[in-house]
Image (cartoon, rainbow, N blue to C red):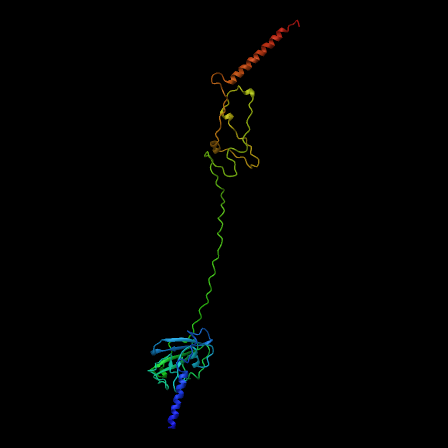
Length: 309
């Protein structure tokens, strides 16, 4: 009776311990995904035939044991009644209570195999328990459910123990530089002068039209004695080029064909009386009559002065 009572008391004690540290004892912690640097331990859980895929979480900071890393990564676990959390029976409620009672050590044909690896290395089956191993910072801890296998061919976690490289830093693109529009090119050709109203040739800016160099010629005085001369021809009265240039002109322009075409000579003719003799002829006759009269007067005076005087 005493032995049975002692066994019953031990079972009650183990039950109480399992209630305290059973499912839900692991507080939600850690973060989803790989640890971004060597400041934590990345924990990988591969459910295999239990369903649920592979879950990766990060236990930040230093981890004292494998059990601490598993719980601090945020996974809920269940130990056995006999060994407590020293032997992991369930992770996230798998396997179910109907498949595994978690009273004693699970059989070798259905249990959670324990693995570890350095970052960028390969998975190694752990020969120590979760309470006897301290994972290095930046390393990987792995759990893979082994069904109908033994320790020699237990499956490794399906995820490679390699921490992804951090994404490159992206800098916002610099705003485009705005430049003032280039000024229009300067034209070397002179400005276009509008044509004259008469439609004559256009002289370039700053020059004098051909055939009109300098100031216009001054009018020519008419000798009264030549008033009775025959009418002047157009060639004699046409304006001529004096050859003089206005002040500041460097060279003397030579009349060209264009000047002849642009400025037609004006024909100057002596006026005549259409009803009688020309005015010049009459003036000459009057002069001759005056001279003849003067001669007669002089002859009479000489005759009147005789030898008696």
